[in-house]
Structure formats: C-alpha cells, structure tokens
Image (spheres, rainbow, N blue to C red):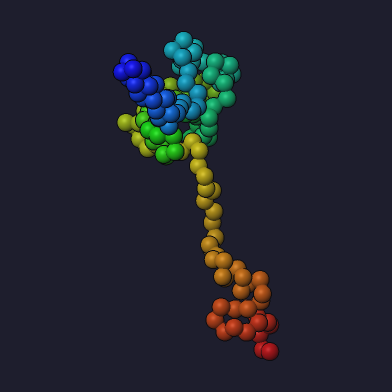
Length: 156
C-alpha cells in the first residue's frame, strides 16, 4: 500500500514537471548564420556576384561611400513563455565593396562592438504632428478647440 502512494506522488511530480516544461524558456535564432566554409568563399577581391552566390541576399545594404552588404543574425532568449525576449548574441557580417564591385574588406561585428540592431520593430517613426483623438474629432466636425465656433473663412 505504501509503495502505491509513493508512485502516485512520483506520477504527480512527473506531470507537474511536464506542465512546467511547457512554460519554460526558449532560445531563438533569427537571421542568416553562415558556416565557416561559406565565409571562406568570400575573400578580398571576390566579385559582388560571388558574394551573392555564396551568402545569398543580404539582410540590408548601404550605398554611402561605397556599397556594403550586411548579414545580421541574433540569438534571443525568453526565460518564460509569456515574457519578453532579450538579445543574448548578435552578429553583423559586413562585406565592403570597392568602386569596381569587388570585395575590399570583410568585417564581423558582435554585441561588444556596438548597438543592438532591432530586427523586428513594431512601430514606424513618422514625421509631422501627432494629433490626439479629441483634436481629430474637433477637426472632423469643423469646430476649433479654442472658440467652439465652426471654422470658416476670415471676415465673416
């Protein structure tokens, strides 16, 4: 009888362990992580086309003072399923080209070299004024916020 109670407690602990494992964290990798053999194919003097064949389309490019391909990857960790994730590792592979579209330099940057790149942003910054709901409501009805009179042409 006593052995049966222990096995029931063990089964309950096992079920609780599995339930908690579903809520435990996860580590995700985003972006392109090239292998060492792939990186060896991209040497100084290689053509732009060779880089595209070896690494594929870059995450982003720059054309200020010469063309640059950026391949960005991040590893993020979320300790519990419903919490926000945080960046634990980031790599930016930068391929710099000269004026004849040949590789001039290959640089590999990590978290220690700069700022975290936001791969998934939820907002788009815009220029101009930010109107509140009330100001938009008054604007739609033709009322001004100051006088309460309908807006009309001057001199009326």
